[in-house]
Image 1 (cartoon, rainbow, N blue to C red):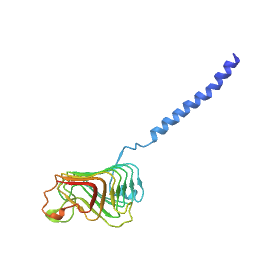
Image 2: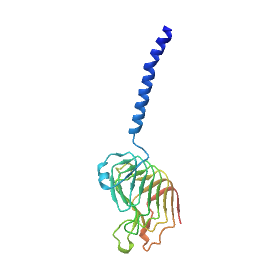
Image 3: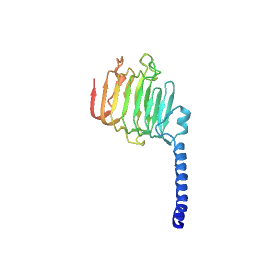
Image 4: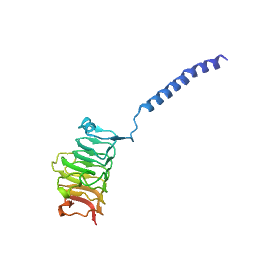
Length: 209
């Protein structure tokens, strides 16, 4: 009886420790942020993350014009407003779509230092953001990144680059290297030949229709 009593007493602290550890684990799980949540981005938030790491996916809603510089986004980027990126790494996909009429719709522009997108770049159904060209207003994608000291020597898309069903401009003024395929279809009509310029794109396969 004495041996049995000693064993029971020894088991009690272990059981108590397990309860306490379980409780602590539950408390810890409650305080961990959801990595799948999305940050709705504005310029104030972008400035707060300057030169740092954004730990979640971000969305730039219609009506917002946001400039990101020197940051790393650990998640996907969606754009219905206008987003300008300088030397940004996106560890995910970038999707630009919709947003309204020409001149105030969705737009992605790259400037100064090249950026790096590790996933796919998809731009669709966009009339384009402001470009100051009167009746030819509206740019959906523009690359003017020409300083070779960003995340990569030239702007790089590790996945595919798709540009479909847009009336906004496509302008690749410098170089965009696509490890996958570049496809463009259903765009325009464009009243000015320079409104659809993909001459700076290099890809494993290019298909334009």
